[in-house]
Length: 143
Length: 360
Image 1 (tube, rainbow over the protein chains, first blue to last red):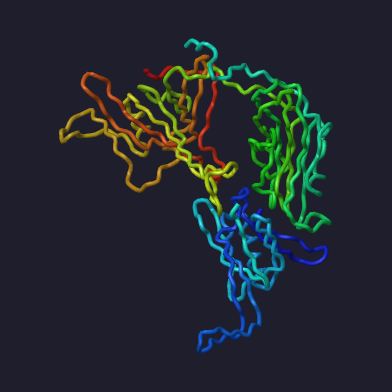
Image 2: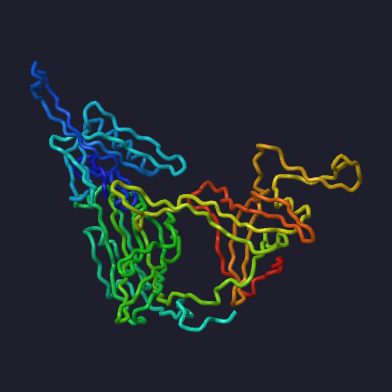
């Protein structure tokens, strides 16, 4: 299933937590999965329009929306937000066409995960997050 | 009603049943992922149990991938190439955390059928059955399995599968056909004389989950998300009690005048005030509509609570007047809208206490 996993604690106290839609696959796929790229550094544009950059870092982004989360997953949503906003790394299991798994993924700088109640009658929530890695992350559900 | 000549495209059977012991784990194959597959055990009485509790990780194995397991066997000695029904008892205690909402139950020829009960959440199991359907092969065999899919830690699963397995022919008998119009009872009493039949419509709304890349509705992704069960028909009685049923929340009293004429002996119904919530006692309770079947027993639909949301009065020259009515089901107000009963369908024996209250 498509989900985000992270580890809390260390050694024998370590445990892995998972946040993802509990709906049966493929209905638990990530929504709005969109890659992006954000260079970090100095950029100047010459008179001829040529862009010159001095890169400090390259952020490869993946924007995700976890939809249809259940009321009973609220604590996990808060814990994932806490983990990411304190610099924690996560693993993204895409369950896409090639079952891509991205490890060592962090929160995109300058962003905040958003927890939102999306359906009052059905008690469903969404978790929107922008993630970052030092290589491109794409999700291919075209299968 | 006489039966049509054969051949006729309805399979008719008295439901011949093969009842055998589930036999515990003997002769069965346990498969699946490490750790979780160790949760199967014989617990006596030919029962099989799956009991798995994992906190945080899969024990010493830190790989957090979702895990599945099955107990499989081939059920033989059945009619060849026949569509059959398989019933196994279930006692279900827990299905929590990373197991919550995951697929579990009986596989018939690799098609999963969910238990007809829910986890109790306590040490006292909810008892029920899991029923599946499938076609036997040319050797009279059926591939059966019990299992669970795609659970992640932390998790807590405790489920028992019953000591016997019943394999019966899927029943479809002509005697099940409804042969008469219906009557309507409330709390064991006929409500009013009806004319014509009463109809029941659950008006259920099914949602097939959307997902990126979806092209059309997909098997296994449907949920019933809402419903508005109704019973519609026409009544004939116009007594005070019937009007209290047609229009709840009103009251009857002696009146002084009607149509501007002062007279004695007038009884007047006044609807309740606007925007005043109905008390629980104003609802119809155990409202049941009953249809007679060819074998002289009955099929019935019951609303534990109901409200008459539409009524009217109509008549025409030289004929009896009709009160068109529509009753909507209401859930018991238990604070559990996901599980509180919306409606029930009963099959009642021919000996069921039944008073003719309809005019067909």
